[in-house]
Figure 1: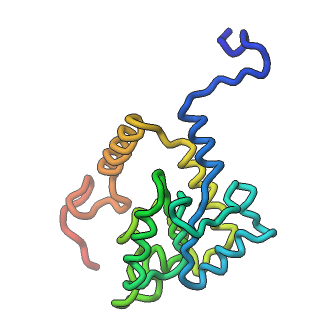
Figure 2: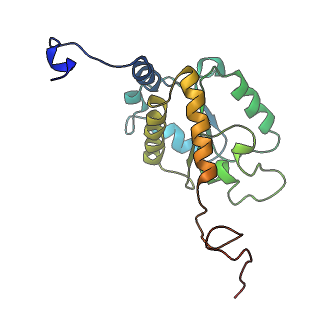
Length: 193
């Protein structure tokens, strides 16, 4: 018999982190940064068929000072990179970034001097969304994954400990291909066949 059974109905027990996480995930305002064909899919996500408003995201911000999510949709040119970084720097903390489409994530088919080979060279990216162009349903799925990440994010000192713990876990992780480069089970030499 716990404390929950002794409380009258209508009483809810939770933590400040969970309430703050729920409030943050329910009030994400995107700053759209549509640069190419992915922008059409981004725009259609706000339409009546897919309805971003059900996630509290109906207000696409034209000013970065009122936004906390940047959706980079399309290829980023070298000339646009400083503008993208300036807009990101003007956003209030906490802020998140979704890289929408293969061009924003890795440069796509444009492997030349004019296109940035991944927006993560300019701003830190939270969610990578593949596809050329990704469907609106895929963007909605990535937004839901970002909402889950936001809701479960720690606050204050606990957040710093969580980040350090995740970094240590990534460093301890084994490579996907066993047997290469002196890793456990490998000879330290590459085998050519």
